Image (tube, rainbow, N blue to C red; front, side, top):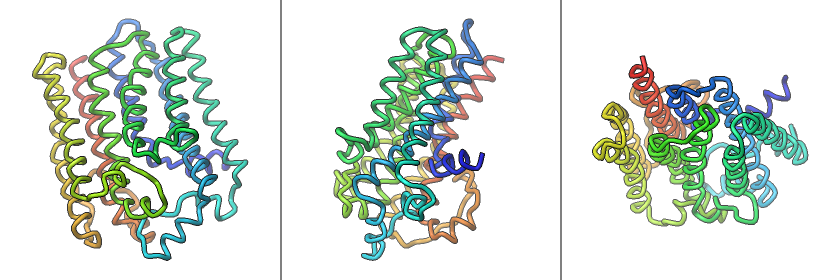
Length: 331
């Protein structure tokens, strides 16, 4: 049990809401179908969780193989400020590269195992979802594509955790696809990509120094970075507005605009980061859950988490609103 907890913790469990909430939303939307299977839906969600943990650990594995982990210490000595050192469990000797690979394969096998169970009941389409997710997940930082090093990592994450994830869970739960789910999955994917993009803006200097071509590094100009961030947030809410205006989505989806002030607040925080990176901020109610803040401060990560957590919470709030109104409408 300690070994399992060790790998779950090092697989960045705090990032799980970016897969768990879209999966829960897809499951909720599928529950309105006559051929809905709650247990197949739950198995699909478990497969998503295992796949997410696998993807995070593979990211560590490939990054460590290419650059090791010492380069972050080198950057810190040069005065670059970035989030906590990556792969600390490797550099500290708590685990080695072989054990990390085994953990990756174990989580991957669990995810594929859930896919096989669903395949027995839902047929071939679920295999295509699983295959696409596996290829894209490994290609995020693994060769030969290494998309996160080519400025495509944010969009890849958006596709995997948005349309691909939600359509796969929906199909697993009810055995069919739906245009409403496909349309809703686009803004969800954009908000997931937003989490990674906010991270990339804050890690712009160290990523550029390390040769990692994130979208932020590709844009070069911080003014352009903020412009893309604005467009990303605008597009997420614009998809909902457009869907309602054209009759593709019911009007109750406009309740998602309750999350718009959170998006605006996050954008203002990022403007302040670009203009005054050393300026301190304290957690506010509108930012959502900010647990264990004192520990975050003690690790000198408050400058990072005060922005990353609201980005994650924005996605969570957006999904929870749709889940709530869907359940109320069904009742």
